Image (cartoon, protein in one colour):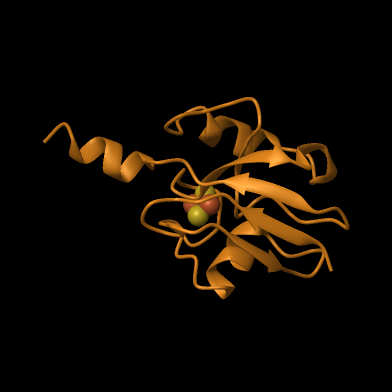
Length: 113
Ligand code: FES
C-alpha cells in the first residue's frame, strides 16, 4: 500500500504522521480515516477549497487535475504549483508527502469580519 507522509501541522497533526492507504483512495479520505481532521466543507465534491494540500513528493504520481478542480484551486489560500484538492487527489501505487497549509479559505475569511 502506498504511504502518505504528512508534514507537521500545528493543529491537525503536530508531530506529522506516516499513514498507509489503498491505491484508489483520495488523500482526503485517507487523512480522515487516520484521525487527521482536514477540513472538507463540501464533503469531497470539489465545491470548496478547504481540503487543499500541497503535495511535496509524488505529485506526478497522482491522477491529473481536471478543469473543475483547477477552477476551485485558483481560490485556495496559499496556492502552489504542487497544490491539490485532497478529495480529488487519488493515490496510485507511489508514496506521497503532503503538507496541509496553515490556513484554509474558511479561516482566512474570518479575518475580514
Ligand atoms: Fe470540498 Fe475537497 S472537500 S473540494
